[in-house]
Length: 171
Image (cartoon, rainbow, N blue to C red):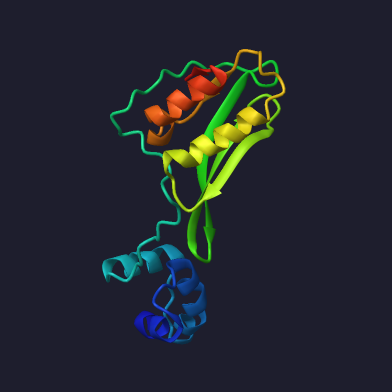
């Protein structure tokens, strides 16, 4: 019954949908089974489908670049441009994944800089930081730059650029 149903509607039909769609047919055939027992049946007969990975990993902290200490742990910013937080996320499109690097002011939640591209190279993050530096309103104030310590943010190309453009503390 399960194999026939999956042939008809698609092999990727998961257990919950399968149970609800087959419940009437099972009742008509005097098969009285609850959802949990149905799952046990699927499992014991190798009929469960594997969950698809629906995310893209954007952080690789397993690298040989210098990893800066986290100097912002348990700190709350008290003014704009005291703490910038950088990160990369992905955006799924028809043509695959694109990556968005953001530099956000932790106090105001304002996006100070961003860059969207189809790669996760260090230049993606550097371009976002360059935009953020251009958008600074308080360039003479002390600034801490924080990231997840992924390879893009620890790459000397990025840290040298960050230190030369706005002399932040990096952590």
